[in-house]
Amino acid sequence: MKQDESARESRPSRRKLLAWAGAAAIGAAGAAAGWKHFSGTVQVKVESFFAAGDGRKKNILVLSGSGRKGGNTELLASAFAKGAREAGHDVHAFNAALDPMRGCMHCGGCWSRNAPCVMDDGFTRLYPLLEQAELLVLCSPLYWYSLSGHLKCAMDRLYPYFQKDRPRSLKVRETMLLMCGQTRLLRSFAGAAETYRQGIGFAGWRDRGRLFATGVDGLGAIAGSSALAEAETMGRGA
Ligand SMILES: Cc1cc2nc3c(=O)[nH]c(=O)nc-3n(C[C@H](O)[C@H](O)[C@H](O)COP(=O)(O)O)c2cc1C
Picture (cartoon, helix red, strand yellow):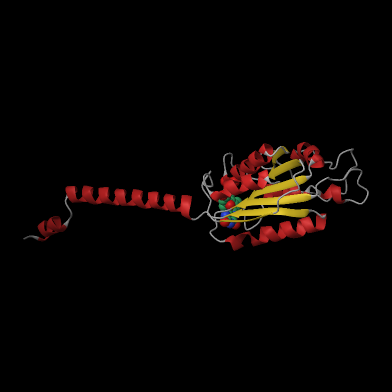
């Protein structure tokens, strides 16, 4: 056999190549489906703490910070709001990612223009809701092991309400925190939980509950998980 003929014989036939390509495609689809199944169901872990309310109807502001419509934070916030509305509470929602605001500039202009802040942005729409709220529910995706920047900017803008000479104060007395993240580890939420703990300690607000859902990354991956049922229960007991 000549050298070029032997090379031709050891080369896979067209039929073999097609068969291998088909097998590879089926394998890849199977692996992807398997991963999707795994990430969509098995990994979602929820850690929550919740102290039931006194049964009094209250004004609740659900303040969230995720830009994804139909995303996991939005689903958590909606589940909480559904439970709270069903229990008769007066619930308002504001998404600081969709009506965004800058962080505090520490300019010292608080209350100088008949408003808490001199900047005119999403906070102009947020503060009337904040001033009515008795329970503030913070909802955020885990971003860089912390609250999302959208929510953090909103929190920073509370600064005028902690000025000594403020003409108006917040009525907020209690807070809750609802978060979700891609991580499989509950400890990845520790930084955000500590920010929340110290922040509400400074403000003199009472922690009424926290919920952390791991293993959710895709748009709406949290749907059908126990996290939403738990958020709804927290809302009902608010
Ligand atoms: C900018 C950015 C930072 C993120 N940082 C983290 C992180 O530190 N840890 C984590 O587990 N997931 C992280 N994620 C993933 C999100 O927490 C996760 O996809 C979450 O479910 C998104 O919620 P959403 O559907 O409301 O947007 C990050 C996502 C983005 C876009």
